[in-house]
Length: 142
Image (tube, rainbow, N blue to C red):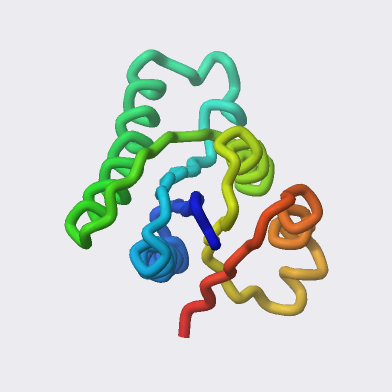
């Protein structure tokens, strides 16, 4: 049913929960698994004078460590996964990669926000659902 599963991972507790649930689905379905590590770029919002080669190197190392952590966790639990790293808005990155790889299922984590926080911000989950043509599993932490 789900031949290719895209696991969206950002290193948060909610992301780790989604990684576990997505891995279980992938193992049960014997699906091809693709891990997408998503990082917000601090360089994109930094003033140009503040961007140094050292800052860029540190950001890249942090992002690569995030991807490596997710891929290693999957390997340790018997799931062979291809992985990639993207910088930017999560909904944009997930939708683009899902289309590019032909995902049948996307697994994302969910963080509960207060009513005020939801009111002030656009819902990434809603915009993701409007952008993709495959199923989406939202892993809700307890």
